Image (cartoon, rainbow, N blue to C red; front, side, top):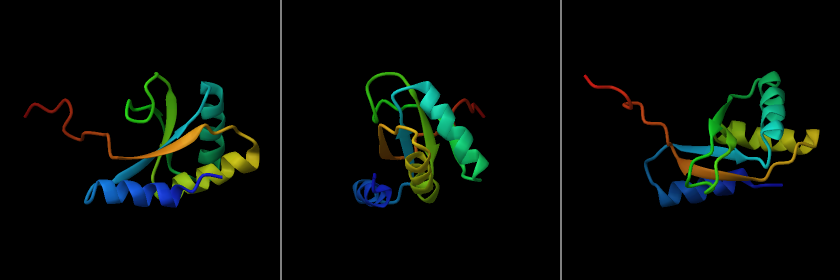
Length: 102
């Protein structure tokens, strides 16, 4: 099983002062959507997100989650038999000022 806590700590060391998000990676959209549904049913805060280029070069879908929810989602994927390709911890990719002109 993936140690999400260790990934987050490494990312925090590499990017001090930045908010760290986790991207859960899948080999198929169906697996991502299956875990999304299961995670939301369990009350986890996850979002469907495009996979950032820093996580993988090819296009794809991932689930975006914070640290605690990412760890819980990984356990849920393991328990429900949903194949998870990996987890990447990155500084927040969302720009709150995108498309603001004033």
